[in-house]
Image (cartoon, rainbow, N blue to C red; front, side):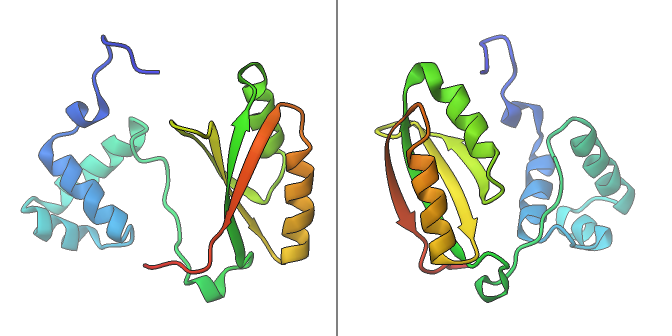
Length: 151
């Protein structure tokens, strides 16, 4: 949780850092020379900024986006979860024990958590959802099966 004494992340990054992050979000494999041309700086400056962003924990890693047909776990959904406040940490730990749960998000509003879940088949997914729903500390769930991804 951020306190009033801590600088906000966007205040720690100058305009060039923000532009660089935006370019890397679109394609993290963009050549350093290309990034330098787009940013109007030298190649060494781009390399130094990327190293600084990695060292400071701003950039945590790089990932790969696959087209939906190439996914190993083609069945995907979001599970909205209402959890007992006193058991929320336990619920999160239990969700992390399932390799099919690829992300967990705290949210505001009606739901406390949203879990992104991937599975190979609908029966596998159904079994997992049943197990999660019966977990101690979970009050209510709602699932949304992802039908398509618009890139």
